[in-house]
Length: 202
Image 1 (spheres, rainbow, N blue to C red):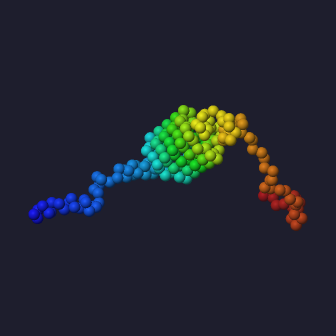
Image 2 (image 1 turned 135 degrees about the horizontal axis):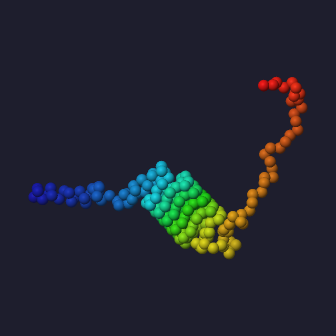
Image 3 (image 1 turned 120 degrees about the vertical axis):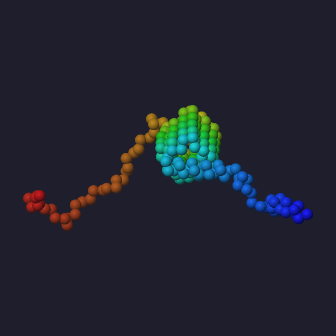
C-alpha cells in the first residue's frame, strides 16, 4: 500500500497545478524572442532582409535607408517612424500601423500593403509598383507623386472628397515670405564715423 501511495505523488502534483515543464512553455515565446532579436538587429545595423518582424513595436524609430526587403512586418507598429529612403521591396506589411510615418523616396515595390493604416502619413514619391493595396486608410495623409488611393487603385482619384494625388507638375511653387526677418534700420547717430585715413593699417 505504501508503494502505491508514493507512485501517485507525481500525478497529484500535476493535478494540484504544478508549474509546466520547459517543453510545455507557450509556443509564442519563441516567436517573440525571434522578433525581439530581429528588432535589435534592425536598430543596430539598419539591415534586416527577410526578417520576421510580425507585430514588432517599431514606433518612432529612425529607419532612414533601412534594408527591409522581403521582411514580414504583418501587424507591426511603425507609427510616426522615419522610413525615408527605406527599401521594403517585396515586404509583407499587411495590417501594419504606419500612422504618421514619413516615407519619402521609399520603395514598396511588390509589397503587400493590404489593410495598412497610413493615416496622417507623408508619402512623397514612394515607388509602389506591383504592390497590393487593398483597403488602405489614408485619412489626413499627404500623398505626393505616389499613385495610391483609398481603394487601392493606382489611377487618379475622381471623387473630390477623396485625397488628391499630386504629381510634380501639379505641385504648387512655394511663395516667398511676406515678412522678412531682417528689416533695415536708420543708422545710429551715436556711432562715430571715422575717416578712412585715420583707420589703422595692418
